[in-house]
Image (cartoon, rainbow, N blue to C red):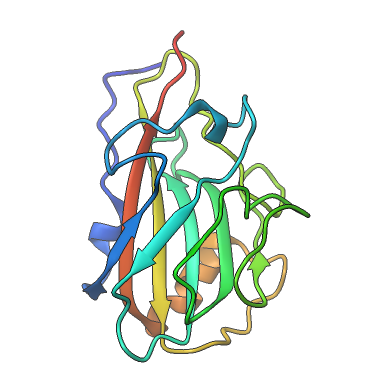
Length: 178
């Protein structure tokens, strides 16, 4: 891998400013390594996530996981969930597995860049520098975005932009020795 390539910016720093709130996981702290069970080559289990302090008027949440360091021009979407109930305070470990776990609300898991409608774990190329996996929770002022099941995460991000009233992020890292 070309380890000399510049690191991609945090994509959320490029979006319009909005209120912030807190996003945590009992399994890793911001900037720390993800446990192997959250990688594509291991158990591929989505982490437990908790959030608090969302802005008043939140009617739903969108949850995503994105790798800006993937060696592609567009990064790599690992998870994208719309329709999480606006009163929710998190998701349990494994909630992103099809048929496993539970999600608060009538959610829709959009296709990730692996091509499946679930959580796709960390999967950097062997020998590449540690990749960042940015988990983001967006608080929306609407419960319905009109998103169809096959909508791409990029299009869904565009569709929700005018409804975002708050954002929380938590970044884990992962690497595979080469």
